[in-house]
Image (cartoon, rainbow, N blue to C red; front, side, top):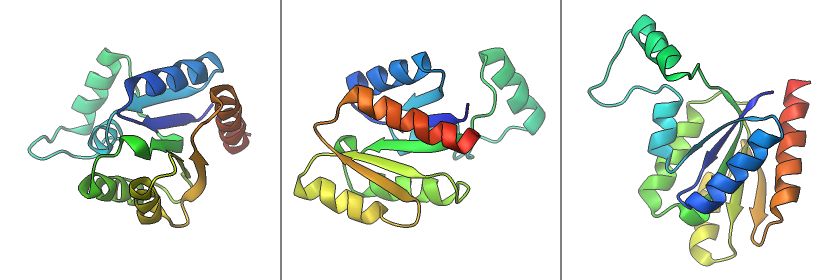
Length: 149
């Protein structure tokens, strides 16, 4: 099954969603920031360059292969500022065009601004709190299975 990338600073909601998706058979990676997501997705970081063979060896040692998400889920309530939203936009622009973005937000003016900054062809769904976690897991599972089969 294709992977799901979760970006959220809130460790409780991130861990709960990750655990439920794994239980449903999804491949999941969860990170706290767009910067961590960029590292996870293999983007070069400042001053760190490794050969492909060296990178493959370290991934195998760590028990992690390459990860290509079929869906990115971002909790914008955990996004702290405009530069972080810009990082997220840049991260998404570097991914294949068919990788959709789902946003989880509260109904407040700051979060609405972040959602507005992320609007574009990639933005597939905006979910406002409160969210039924079980329903969210089913929606994500259906979406990524649709990509897979």
